[in-house]
Length: 106
Image (cartoon, rainbow, N blue to C red; front, side, top):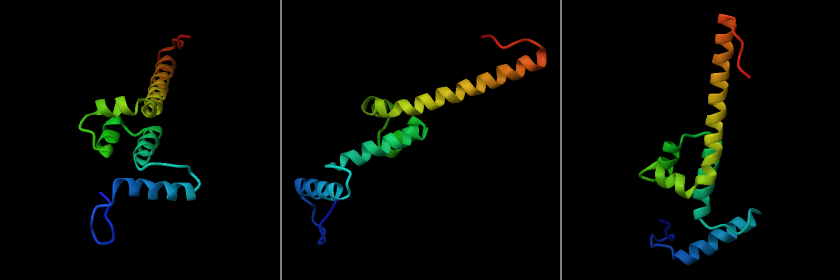
């Protein structure tokens, strides 16, 4: 909740208007406050932060809502996890092959 200098709630529409003025002046376009939340999820996801932590940060009670609402933002985290698993298994397969004399399957 945002308040005025005297502590009363700021009108929803006035807050959105003022917020848009700030983002336009900053050169990032006409944003609404909800887009900060979306950007946070996108950045955390792209950085490989687990979905459970992203859900916690956004205040979602489960990862289901986070995944449904921000599925396109969560994909980079899933891809990061997949690549990590590929490296881990490829690394173990290469190591196993080196110790037992077999070759890595193509």
